[in-house]
Length: 460
Image (cartoon, rainbow, N blue to C red):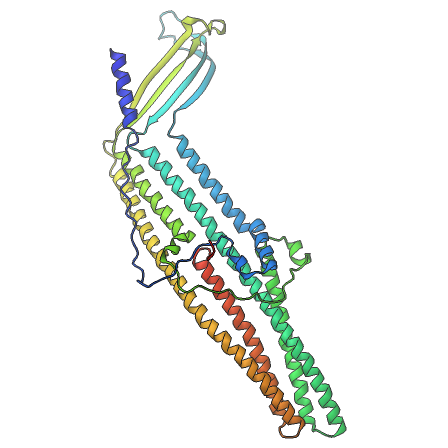
């Protein structure tokens, strides 16, 4: 009857175990503008929207070899291992034991005066903490949330890396386009200087006009030198992002980048629900769940801790008798621990966990607000730059026409050479500004992709 009572009691404790003391998590709702927005869908490989094979290849290379990606992947592995450890604590542990010892006892204890003896033992030991208050399950839940948060952090690192690679790529492509523009201008300036020098030698123009043509030629060459210096620095920055070694960095083949990709078409408006796909928001949310579960872990210390221990095996003074039925031994019993007075340690730990939760809540709200701001700013910026790019295109057409008119008028003696030089310089600056604005537009679109946590795909 006694054994039956004990069995029923243990079964009841096991059934009641897992009671969670963590509070119900109330995720704050962030009020966003009430504007009619068009739904967009996330496209995992959003960078392919630029239709640039070289860019696609470089990003794939970076995702495979970048050092930050490798470190982030290891953090995910560690978080998963931590969860596995906490999950294993929910189950009993069974260990095999074996000992051989030689001992000497006090001559004043045993009546048979057995001062020296040998002890042999083999057995199994069982330990199991009943998760009556949900301490172990809450710890496992916290670690699981941290594991999910680490996966979201990995995605943030990935998006940042992709953004950095594209930025470096656009810088190089823009430099290449500007160098090409300068090369064309330099060649025109060289031909112009040669022609004006011949005119000066023939006495048809004065030395000032020939010198001005030479100065313009030298100025364009100096500007090209600055761009070439910047290009070298950008190539090194891109190589680092691709995870190349120092040898590959300086001896390896440089990627072929010769033009900016075409901008993509941005749909009008975004869905506020799309912000939930941002990995940093998901990471903050998982951290909220982790901190909330830890409150339950700390609260469980207020209540008794109940563990079950048991052992079964053989023990004998002689190894030859170790497996005799009479050498059998066993033991079983619960361990009960209840805090009585700890100078407020448990209460302080609970309050600390609550403070951590409040910090996580504020961090979550801050992340959502920042996400919406980044998307709003990126959309506004993209629209403004689109208009600016159109103005630059019209500006180039106007300066091309102006240069044609002034050159014709100069040849007919109706204009001076300074007007031609001014038209050439204006056309050069307008062309360079157009390339820079196109790069800025592409950068704003990349920032929008990143702000949305991945981009969109209207055909999904």
